[in-house]
Length: 488
Ligand code: PNW
Image (cartoon, rainbow, N blue to C red):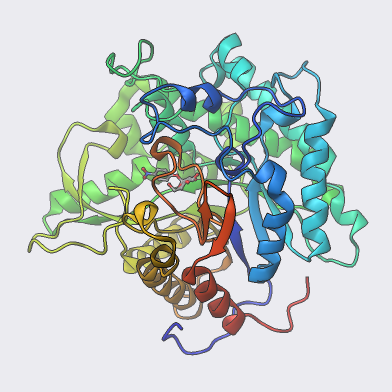
């Protein structure tokens, strides 16, 4: 149990676990689903660490009722999941037909959650673009087409799922919506480093197509515009009746100067500008960070006056996905990190925190608190922590008993939940939600299934789910701190 003394969480605070469609659903070719660009990408030899793909994942398209039971057993107030665009509109485009089976699947899921008093917290796009949009016109690279197609997709979802609250008067809940998950990852990992679908990159050993010096910045802008256009439609057409909240969620880790050398202090801000400010500054402040323009010159697209009007203020809250902290040193030639070198090794040779299974993650809760303060002071909006989690080193090769006793993950969440309470009660930050990643071990993108982020262990031979100790830990923490008078 956390050492933080008991203090109730704010009345409307919600917590729950998060997942994403392609990472859990499987059943990629049933009930009329069209291909997403992760289907073939993940099937291509060399694209995932273990050579495995998303065809089955955690089989949640078939086992979703079990997942809902599990959520209820954990006592969550909310569940963050994403919709697969290509289940809803198999070919993706604005003139393409809607698939009733796709609507039905998510509709049933939403109803089942509401039945258990669990608030659906929906992400419209968590990286699984319909393959056909990529093939037809280059997907995210094509502003004229993608903004319109994404907006129509969003509109179909608002129509199909947004009114549910009306039928559930018993609950005073609102179905929250996120337009996009982590535009930095969409742009940089998909079109810069080429490690995520569609795998475009200047590195010809990796990809025969792509330009890492221009495409990520174009894609980033098109993602921002698509998000903002969908929000405009929501606010004008749906919000007056549905009353929902809508916003975007950004990834971003705390960037801490390596030492007090002024160059390294400046480098940490540059790293924040590229990791977070690239998206957050236009959306919340109405312009790109000056450092982005300085670094990229004309390679960073301009917004027209009309576009920036659309973009500025287009998120009702700050959606925050965060995992770790980097120590920043000026230098290096990696534009995707703002020409900053990252390390976890302090000047005295010690490590910042416990190493996770993936190279980019160490456990450092103090950084989480600094980042919450930075975002609150810079953007002044309520914060929804929509992802936060840890993959225990070598968990995938441990015997089950050992994997379930996930002390490193518990340690991570002891730190982050204590910080969450301190940030709310001592720093006065308006934090409204917390979603540990993830409900289940699942398809961890380019890592395949070797890296496990789940609070629930999945045996991929049987698809049996086993709660890990960390799930019990989190359930207890939130039960202990929750305001018992809260009604949902
Ligand atoms: C997020 N990085 O991705 C995603 O939203 C999830 O789908 C994913 O499973 C989870 O974090 C764990 O990885 C990230 O390299 C992928 O810094 C890579 C990075 C950060 C977030």
